[in-house]
Every structure is written in C-alpha cells, then in structure tokens.
Length: 448
Image (tube, rainbow, N blue to C red):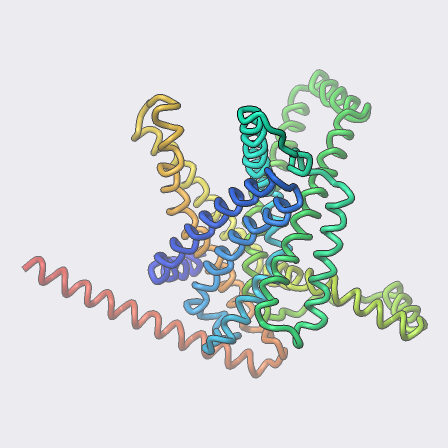
C-alpha cells in the first residue's frame, strides 16, 4: 500500500493540471450533450435518442484521457509496454482504448445510477421544450404537431431497429475497417455507445420490473415472517440476521465500485499486458472440444466469427480481472481501503462546505450557488481517485514482473522488464532527491 501511495503522489504532482482540465471538459461535454439531445427530443424522439449517447461518450473520452495522461509516469507498465512516441500510434492507442472501454464503462455508469440521471435530465429538457412549443402555439392561436416529440423512453419497435442498426454498423466497421477512412473510427465508437446505451437502459428497466415483481411475491412475505419469528424466539439471532444482511449490502457497495473502476483502467491500459489465464480442463471440456471438431467447417467458421465478435468485447475485461486476481488480496485490499478513504474525504468536504457557508435561503442562494460551490469537491476528489486507480494498476503489473506477463509470454522479456523497472525507480528517486535538495537550498536562502 505504501508503494501505491508513493506512485499516486508522484503521478498527482506531475499531472494534476491535465487531470483537472480533462475532468472539466468531460463534465461540460456531458451537460451540453444532454441539453442538445433534450432540445432536439422536444421536436423528434428519434433525434433525441440518437444524440443522448454523446453525453456518455463525452464522459468516457475524459476518463480515458485522464488515465492515458498518467501513462508516461507508470514505471512498471512502461517497462512491459512502452508508451508509443509516434503521434499516429498514440491516436490509435486512444481509439482502441475508447472502443474497448465502452462496454465496461457504460455498465459501471448504469450501476452507479448516472445512466438514469442522464435519461431523466434529457426527458426534463425535452418535455420543457415540448411544453414551450405548445404554449407558443396557444398564444399565437396556431397548431403544432408534437406527436413525434419524446414523452418517455420505452422499448418500442423503432428503438429495437436503432439497436440492431447500430450493432450492425459497428460490426461492419470492424470487418472492413482497413478499407475505410480513419475518421470512421469515431463513427464506430458512437455506434458502439449507442447500442450498448440503449441495451443497458432497457435491461436495467426490465431488471427493475423483475425485482419489483419478486418483492411482491408471497415468498418474500414468508421470509419477513421468518425473520420476525427468529427475532421473537431469540433476539440475538435477529440482530445477527440484520447485521449479516447489512454487511452483505455494504460489502457489495464498498467492493464493487473500486474494483469496477480498476477493471476499466485495466481495459484502457491492458491491451499489451496478457497475464496467463485460467486453463479449463476435465472430461467434460475434452468431450465438448471433440464434439466441436465434428461440426461442419462452415458452421465452425461462423461460430468462430460470432465468438470473436462477442469475446472481443469481454476479453479485455477478463484480462483486467485476472490481473487483479494475480495482484493478490493484500494489494487489492489496500487499494479498496484507500479508495474508501478518498470517498470519505469527499463527503467530509461537502459537509465542511455547508458549515463554512452557513444557512442561506434555498431559492435566493442555494439554487444559484450550489453547483459552483460543490464543484470544488470533485475537483479535489477526482484527480486523487484517478491517480489511485492508475497507481494500483501499475502495482498489480509490478506484482507480476516475476512472471511472463508480456504479450509474447517470454520470460527473457520479463527479466528485461524487471531491470527497466529498477532503472526507472532509480531515476525517479534521483529526480525527487534533486528537487528536494533544490527546495532545501531555496528555503535556506530565504531563511538567510
């Protein structure tokens, strides 16, 4: 954990202005995209839905950029996979990171509730625009057609068509991208975000309905009655039941978020890091492989294409999870603790700001000042959180330096990587020592 803190502080000192700039750019891009989508949605629902994923893409671009800004200072990752120097290579790396991170980012975005917030804000703007048009028509004694405007976001035939066309367009780009212009990579990223965004939103809506249905079933009533009976029979058992239930709920929230963000960082950074995966063995696996070999060659080719299309999205996620697993519980546990402390600091800053400002009128002060005032908190917390995630990923790579983790799996390259890490650490310590000596001399001169 000490090494994570040292690396995180080093990254923060070197890159915090760029981190702040990218965070502000992503937040502003998200806000403007929602406003634009809502304005268009007040006239046409299809146009609004097509523009809404731009809000997620704006945030995704800022997140990827914040992580890649830190890339040059990550000693262990650079030892295994040096950062490209050529401008074209950097652009391709940025594009590949964006395409790989769309799926896990939107999944985390949805689980944290930001997807619902974006849709709700979009609907508020769209309905406000639609209402203004109707009132203007009443004042001017004219008629206005608002049948095509958005009034909700639901799973309808036209939304299904949008998802299918977006998925097909993304698949076509992947198949023929070598023959297409470079700018089409932006279109492919947008199509990927569009179909995943709609699928994630409607899947979340469906899961919510299923959960609500389960909560109204008789079995849940029996479970509540059982809990009451256990508590009445022996109170400590009831307390234990409640404690376990609370602990499971809190553990899920505390562990999922930091591990999910570390997975996203692994997807962004980890295209050149290939930890040895889990090998499936056994009679059942051997039997499945032998039966697969008896299939017609054309069918096997189609299955390989389908597996490549689906697996290509999940393979970076799986490799990131493997990297965390091989990093060890001590390293990951220390990271989760530091992540929780940063969130605690953020909440403490919010409380402190309210205490410093003091009581004021809701409409005359807080409605106007709340947004710029509380923007101070993420400007402090987000750079800290980003450098913590990057430093932890670098530490997980460092934990694997003793194993063949380079793309080729060659142990000779791993030995070379170990030496590069040692050289990089020495250079960093010498630079820090020189800076400290210069600061000490300056302070001594000021004292004189």
